[in-house]
Image 1 (tube, rainbow, N blue to C red):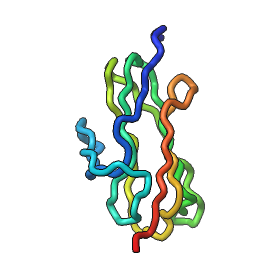
Image 2 (cartoon, rainbow, N blue to C red):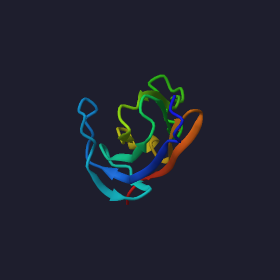
Image 3 (cartoon, rainbow, N blue to C red):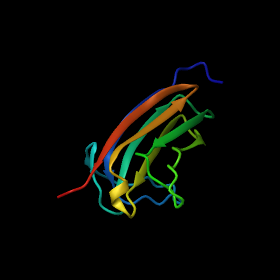
Image 4 (cartoon, helix red, strand yellow):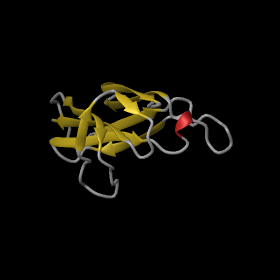
Length: 130
């Protein structure tokens, strides 16, 4: 493991273009905000720039506002791990609104953790537009 301390910063946060998770391209930044309208296919989240952490594992988590699954049970947070590929690396963490929008309202917290420490944390408020 590197003895250098990783440098992590959120460089864009808000609403983005649709993201293709099969592509290496990150979504295009559209608007800086933490207030997200509950409109189907609205993509939101943040892009971080991570330096001095090559070959380490980044843990991500998205805490949804008690969204039920098909059986009516509250979905667990969406989480996972990614391998940091470069010494100067950009990573997108985000989600989008899907139908029905009525159960997507509320706070969506997104976190990144490196070596057991939260290094990025952002909460978005999804609201029903008038």
